[in-house]
Image 1 (tube, helix red, strand yellow):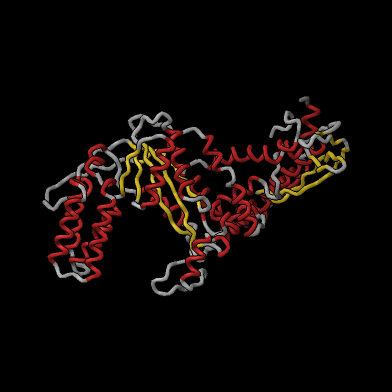
Image 2: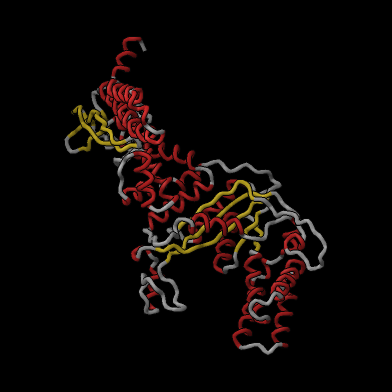
Length: 503
């Protein structure tokens, strides 16, 4: 570039220079000496934003002036557009404010207009820029859409509606599944365990976005699925179940029973920590069914261990349908898995049994649970089942308490194949689903379950996937990839000649 050309390009930024010089002059005026630092911050922020907006506008105007003319532009419809019309303008809402993009339109009778400059700038399909879309997504997954609206207006000075924020958030999430299908797997040695875990949590939905089975069940009970106050014991018919999954690597950590539940000998014991999760990956969906989410998790695990050389552990809460779906997916992938039922769920059942033999608040109930838990950790559930039934026969329990004891025993019998904690501890496997339980709290409860929230299906899905993406630490790399995908969809897909359309 010669000096004259450079001088001409820099001259295009005269308007921005004028605003900047005016701001500098204002700050240098003696009157500014009376301003507090807070007043200076506010003034510079407001004036500075307009300087940046004008810089962007000046650059776009320069691009417009220097846009090369083509003899024709051919779309994928194979129609050559030879009618050239300069001066076609569109607005673009950005993080600095709204600017206008003026470019050449290439036209043909009966065909849609094409604007090659839009492809060079990688302009989005809607009015909001990718920067504004990114900001909307970040703020929308942190708090309510009202809070996001306030935060965006405070940061950019751009007024944007709640509905538009929700739409931008949904648009920002469209490529997450494709991103993970092509992303390289996390690195781990063959000696690391490969752990999968699954859980579900309900999200309050708008009536039209509930599953048909939920609406039918609510109607069968004679209830209104969206009634504010539920009758005692009535099932909440306002929620749609979201399914979550996690895959992570963990170095085996051998432990003893005393490391999990201390004995009552009074002897000091330095507890050894359990396996530590690394390379954690989370996903979830409120639109897809459990089998689809489980399949996605197995695909992620397959990426990490394509030759099935590692030990695969699947932690579960004991739901029969979930167990069958997991076994089916393992068979599809041709991988051997070790199913481990979450110890915390087993403890919950032991506490139910404890209150059948102890008064509420009796500290002896804790010792009861600890003793039986240690037995299960050491020998499995058979001894505990026998002892619970023997205790029930020896005590004059009510019918309800006898039913509870039998439910506990039946649960332990049914889950017996997945309660081999002695082997798990000896081989250093995890035995609790704390990672996925924490994910439910973080991904869903902290945002999707806030007071008063009622979700559309697309909105809930987008926020859930974005929160998982951010928790995985992949947001920035994803968003760069997402912009490239948008360029392919919005621009390259409409032109026969792709060579000169690089973003």
